[in-house]
Image (cartoon, rainbow, N blue to C red; front, side, top):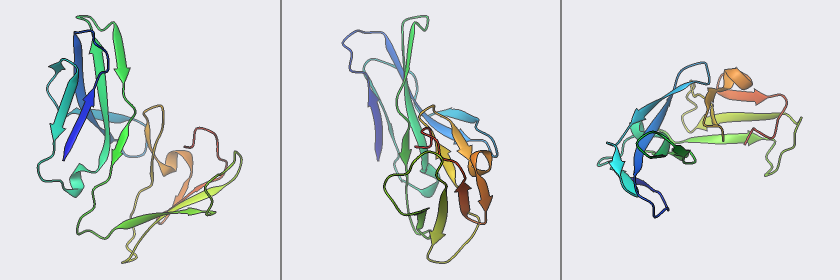
Length: 154
């Protein structure tokens, strides 16, 4: 499996790095793990030779230009889910609709075929934050309940 990112800009002196975002438990902070050496040019890639469950996560590319960092651009975060012999889990959204409205309530449940417990519900936002359900909702067993939705809950 190959992860790659590129800058669509003909100017030179771009430095690209590919990162994996690792959430800390019980808060919105995360640390970045650099997956690639700094590469000058227009593209960078990272190869996962034997994909495993441990590679499941959120990945991001960052591009910087200039000797001093004059411009910094972060890509959209990209979730990568890898399934294997572990029981596959499903995210159940209740109520079951494609569109939800602000101030509605919503529950997110994790279910698998073996009825195992201990699943976590983590949110990835457009502001590049990762947070556990306990920060923005109430969590019981494998269900996260959001009492009041907002437009940032996407």
